[in-house]
Image (tube, rainbow, N blue to C red):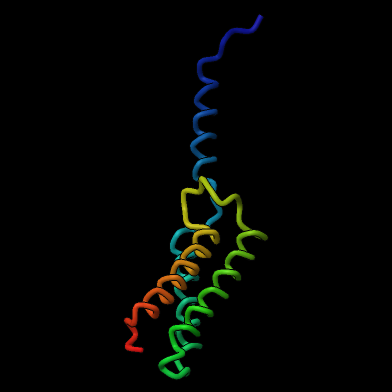
Length: 114
């Protein structure tokens, strides 16, 4: 007859702790946020040569396009969109769409001097 092993639970707790920390290193907050900032800066650099009245609309379009690229990346490579303890490609897509909406709203309100 076997007895109840009290020491066996310790291994289970350490495995649970490891599984919580077991996210891949390439999906950390800094990496995703840095990649999103780089893509937003690229959108701004591509929109900069445009004439002043068209600049906000071109920038908003490029940010929306960036959002769709991030969304495609999230659908193909990222995990589920919820319950992640760090930023994912889903969050970067949301940031791109939110930035596009913000630029469009600012342009409609005339904050770009147009």
